[in-house]
Length: 455
Image (cartoon, rainbow, N blue to C red; front, side, top):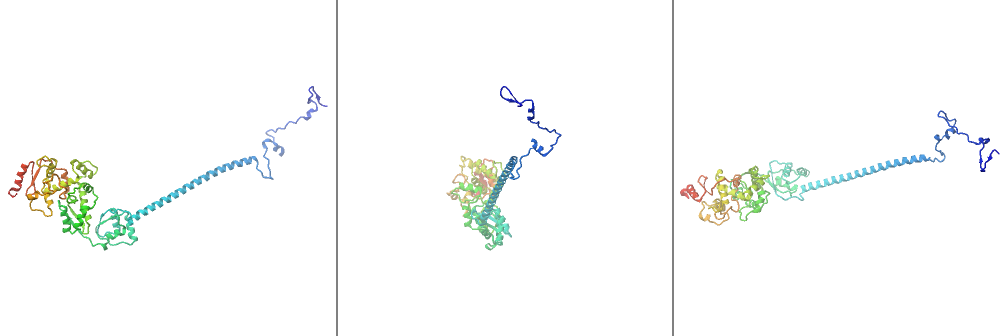
């Protein structure tokens, strides 16, 4: 045998013919070498390919992994795109629904508002005076009604009249209407077929006229309205003026006429068919305008003329009606404008100093003519001066229960701003000017001068 056995009993190779059993060294290709055949190339570890299974078409592990990764990426993209599309669609749907609701709500509201204006389902019954001139068209009437707050939509009024083929001839005049009247009723009010042609009447109310004199003038001289209607409006109608509101809060039950003092004396233009409300309202509105013109720039504190007037009243310790009351006395006692301030000082001094010899009595003879205006006397007798009447300023202290005339803005201004004098008496001469005195003794002398032997 070619082997030798060692002391351990194990066999070990010898150096002889045993070399034939050694493995041949592996041939290594240098970088410049090329594979000599296909099998050598395939057997190289760097060139090794995944096995191919043509019969079953089964993908390799690497292919499966790559495909799985691609699917995961695609799934992620699909999830993102699908979610975004769903949210976008939801938002669009919400916007669409909201838009429909908003448009529907607006159209519904618009239809309700316009419908209420056309048919006057729920509207105020406040009486409003409206004036139209000759040749007024339906369209122009709608504009006038809108400006005066009778209707809200002039265009709707014109459109309604057009589709209803309502285009009657309208007659000029002043009318009292209410927002509670529907379009058809309003058109009929102004239609010529229901009215006779109205003429313009120019009315002049002199300064210092009383309510009775004004009513008599309107009815007897100008044939406007009637006494019953005019007196009813004067005593009961709820006019929307700040001074009427104050008046009604503190009116004396002894007052003769409610609106005495506020029917401003002036020249007015009325239509012959004007209502009693229209006639009286125009005088009250003129009063308000004159107060604004007179006091809007006065030095009294206040943001507007009403606040200024109220602050002036507070500083004088009087209500505005008491100022008008005082002004009515000044108006009737002062024949010449230059004496308004001095006569006002006499009345103010008597009111301010009741402890003086005049005792707080105003003693105005003009109040007696107001008491007896139905049958005015030629002369004031002692019996008249002693008559028991709340307007008797010789018998009752202070101001009478209400104004005794309708004064001008000048008299009202001087009621606020009297001249600064020490006079407590005055007596009129034949020329209308007055003699003023501080004491009763001086006053007696002035009476002798004014009347002489004719007293």
